[in-house]
Image (cartoon, rainbow, N blue to C red):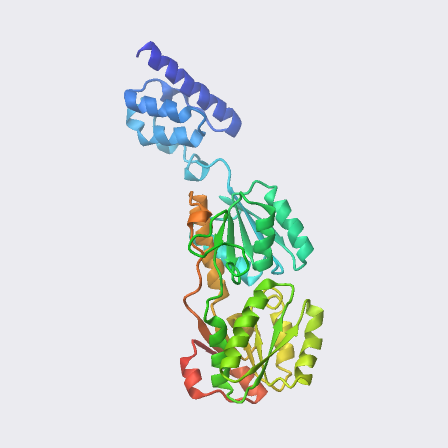
Length: 384
């Protein structure tokens, strides 16, 4: 073997010994005694130049026939694919949803698992969840300082907090209202910057909810809705709902709520204003408090349409919209693509294309209302 090749091999051996000390991996000197293929040697020495042990090991294992003295590979079963990456990917999760074990965060974790990512093995997740907006901003800043691979957000306020905190770490919206209308991204097809993901709104969704409610309860003329003046997404959906209601002869009655303590008084305002129907938007104030809202709505003498199936599972009457758990599961695929090198700026923001009509017949019976058979026949899910 020539002097040049010998010096190259010494560099390889030195690198592997250093890696052995750093990672406490076994070192087997015999497998470095002789290399028969100069091209492979060149590849090995190039891969050694600042590369990880896993990269070198991959080359050596792939061409084991050119290494003499390697012995049986099965002698080292503990050096496997799981150890090729020296450390797990780090993901931040920022949301206003209460608790890491919530349905939506569990669905996200399941989506990651289906793609081969297991928390505590090849990924770690930094969970930051709070209903408080000031704390949400502090959590976003905290995550931005952690040098994460990607931040996943749940809800519009979390999206905006993360965007404010970092312009470099990729951000994936697991669900959001109208990212273009609220100025989060310039367009759905070309989001640009470091942010992409999914929206649960589509241009015709607000109008469709009004139409379904009118079909189910033709007598409704004064339609109330809960909205949060501090959240720009509510204002956009309020505008679209008002336009749809006016188009079929309804009057919209917006009732402002800013916190859970406002809900009970809001329902009193509806009754005083003569409301005979209600639409509940699916946003960050209402989703975590769905059970409270459903309980209050079911005490009223008028029907309620909800924006998500989850409200109906909690006892609500009727809902039309996307399945939110599907969006969280889908967001895992965005994370997967980013971890594999995709750029958020090149990944279009997706809007839902499938919407579900869900009806709770148990609630209908308790409220003493009858739904048209044609509507029941069209429902994607009827709870009995």
